[in-house]
Image 1 (cartoon, helix red, strand yellow):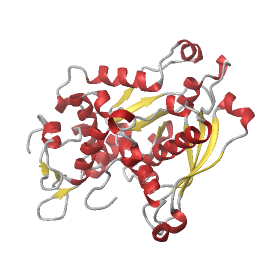
Image 2 (cartoon, helix red, strand yellow):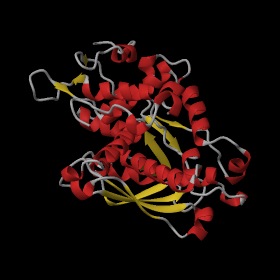
Image 3 (tube, rainbow, N blue to C red):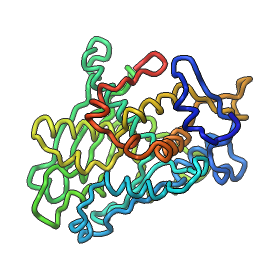
Image 4 (cartoon, rainbow, N blue to C red):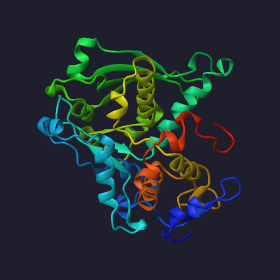
Length: 338
């Protein structure tokens, strides 16, 4: 297709088993090609410097105390407002962002749209491999390892260590630590979970390749990431593991209620699988005869944003248990593998 008009519908209507689509129109905004760079560099620029919807969040502790909205609610309001009245092809958002107003690390947090479905897929994979110890051995399953001492949780949020399995048999689990993760509801107004969650942070001991990729730029712009925290799919998978553990062991809804990540509906997953498996981009820099490649992460994120604009927030960026079933029961098979 040479036009981006009604692209969401064209993708949605694809038969995933028998049909595909080649996009011959540039998705990445032209500004990221400045300097004559190729599409790989342009995509990296777009993912780190492109359009993120800034959420209309509480700006200080007083607002957090008086504002009853949870992240899901102000995320929905902000995204719908951003997309209202725009033509589908004019939507170039790659994610959303929020800003902490407490603690030492007040970098703005960035959440690319692709990490929701991909993080949920990693989470489902972790559940799936638990039944296959002979195949993946010690790498089976996500482990929620430890919490900070309980006396500090209400005050600062939890410090939680999570180990996430890699889909590569030879790689160790990704090991990471959450900080500022609210684990308890408290009547102390100075330690409001809706305020603490805005400072959610991660630190990796064993890092995903994508984490290294973010910093592996060759265009001289590495330093521009110092004021940003960009979350990864593994962060979503780890957060889901904490949510599941708290619900199962403590009947604790706090991490789920203040979850800062958008969880995918079944409709979004079906769309996402087509983006990964049934779409190609015509790109002049590719070396094969047809000049075709798979979508880059920023392109996937932009098309997910357009699906939200076309189909609606609750139909795409909102997981509903009654409508969608369990996240781990989604059909994640793409191209014959889980």
